[in-house]
Amino acid sequence: MVDNKISSAPVKYDNSFAKEIYALENGHYAQICMQCGMCAVSCATHDIMDYSPRRLFNLVRVGKKEEVMRSNTMWMCTACCMCKVRCPRGIPLVDVMHDLKAMAIKQGYVDYPHAAFHQAFWQEAFSRGRVFEGGIMARFILKRGLGEIKKLLALGMKDMGMGMLKHGRVPLVPPRKIKGLKELQQIIQRAQALQEKEAK
Figure (cartoon, rainbow, N blue to C red):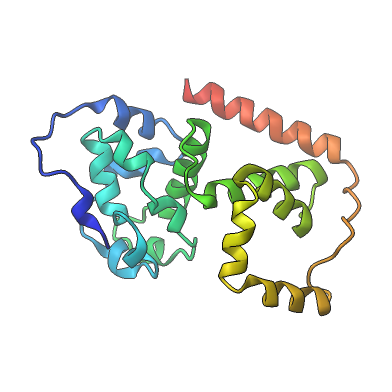
């Protein structure tokens, strides 16, 4: 874990960012964190996170918005729920991380490729009612640029992709849209509007 990114300069407390986080659907859970560190020792990906969840919550409390929103912590969360199971306060950290991801995207903190994938996945699901892998990849590349293909090929993804195609794991033809797609989209849009209204 790379916790040495936290500045040693004197901290000037600013609770406006904390209030912004606490207003999120699950953001108020960050207030009840007792900084025990159980989330960090339970997390399978904490070694590659900029900050452990407890340190992230501490940064929220002291108003370090840029450190929080530009960190990779929420993007490295695999949603395994081990932290939630072991948290003595029962904090649903996965839900808090989802809220932080949504907030990061809404406010333009989308430097990590995970953010582009998150958006591509959601847009594909919203437009079809189900997921088409080819559509996700196309949307992802449009957001990240063709350079992202070179990175994937450099990681040896070509052989894996060809193997998946060969075994029919990646369909070439998009699936049909679900019945009642317009109604589903209306429900989602109403839920989003309600969420935004409650956040104000």
